[in-house]
Length: 469
Ligand code: AMP
Ligand code: ZN
Image 1 (cartoon, helix red, strand yellow):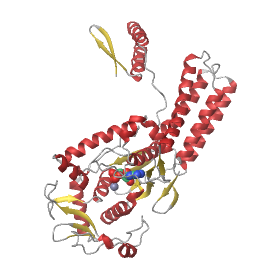
Image 2 (cartoon, protein in one colour):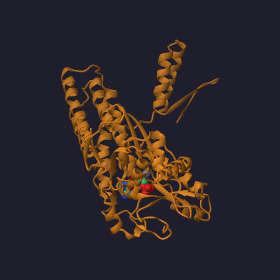
Image 3 (cartoon, helix red, strand yellow):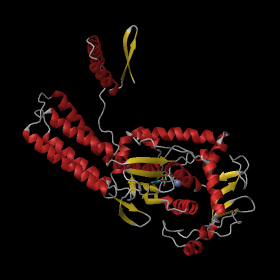
Image 4 (cartoon, helix red, strand yellow):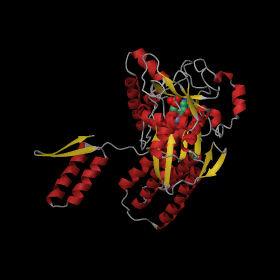
C-alpha cells in the first residue's frame, strides 16, 4: 500500500510502526457552527482510509479532536450571551449527527481541547525547560521557532524566506516575541473569555498545542498517520511537528496526508459571497450517501468542485449501485435454485477480479475514483449475468461482493425494506411455536432477523409485543 507523504513529497510504501496496527490522528473541526461541506471532505476521505486499512486487517486506533476553545466560539457565545461551552457542546452534538448521516465511523477517541488543558500545560513546561519556549513579560508563552532544527520540513519552507516574505508575522499585541517567527503556545485571558490558571498567567492555549498533546496522550509519541485538509500544512502541522519533536525528542508522525480543497461552482467557499453550504443544507435535498459518493468520486489530493450538475451525476452513480443490489436481493428471494451451477462458479471466480482492481486502486494512495470505477464494473457484470434462473449462491456471491466494496467506501447501498405487519406477525407466530418446541436456536434467529429489520420484540405477560425501532 502506497501513501503520498507531504513530508517527502512522494508516494511511499506504508510500513506501520507496529505490525498490524495503525495509529492515526485527524485534525477535527472548530465547533462554532454546523459543519460545512468543505469540513465533510476530510471526514469522509480519512474515514475511508481507515475503513480500507481495517479491510486489510489492520487494527486502527483513530483519534480526531474537537477544537472547542477558539476566538470564533467565544465570539458566538458572547453574541448569544451564553458560556462558550454551551456553543461548543451544541455544535459537537450537531456535528456527530451529520457524521452519522454520512456514515463516518465514530473515532476510537474524540477528545476535546478544553478537557486536555493539563496535558498542554505539561508540554509547554517541558518546552520551556528544554529551551524551546519562553514566557514573555505579559505571561504569553511563545515557541522559539529557530531553536527547532527541522522547522519548515513539512511545508518545504525556508526559515529566512518565511521571515523575509512575511513581515506581518509580527502581529500587534505579540511584540514581546524574540523573533517574528515564534508562535503562541499560551496566551493571557481577555475580559469575558474562558481561562485556566497557569504559572505564566491565567489564560488559554494557542491552537496548535492541543493536537500535539492529544495525539501523544491517545496514540503515543510516535504515530503512523497524521491527516487533515491542505490548509493545515502551514502553519498548524508545521507547528505541531516543532512542538512534538522538540518536547519528545522523537519523530512525530511517519506519514502526513492532506486532502485538497472543495470549491463551489469553481469559486472558493465563502459565506459572505453566498456560495456556502452546510452538510445540513445538502441533507434537505439529497441522501447524505450521495454526498459521500460525490466526495469519493475524485482523488482526495485533487481539488473538487461542487455543483448542482455534479451532485446529480453522483446521485445517478450511487443509484446505479443501489438498484443493482436491490435487483439481486429481489432475485435472491424469488429463485428456486439453491446450489451453484458450474458456469456460475466460473463467473464468481471472474468477479473476484473486481476486488483485485478495487484493491489496486486503493493501494495506490487511496485512489477512490478508480475504486468506484471497479464497483461500477462489478455492477455491470452482475446486471449482465444475474437473472431469474440464477442460483441463490451465485446471486448472494455477487451481492455480497458489491456490499463488501461499497462498505469499504462507507456507502450504504442496500435499502432496508419496510416489513409488512402481517409478515412480522407470521414470524412472531413461528418464534412462539419454536419456543414451545424448545427450539431456542430458531427462536433467537427469528428475534435477530426481526431486529436487523428494525423490529423490536418485547415478551410481556400479555404475550409478545413488537414495535418498529
Ligand atoms: P476547521 O474547522 O476550519 O479547522 O476545519 C476542519 C477541517 O476541514 C480541516 O481539516 C480543514 O482543512 C478542512 N476544510 C475546511 N475547509 C475545507 C474545504 N473547503 N475543502 C476541504 N477541506 C476543508
Ligand atoms: Zn490539529
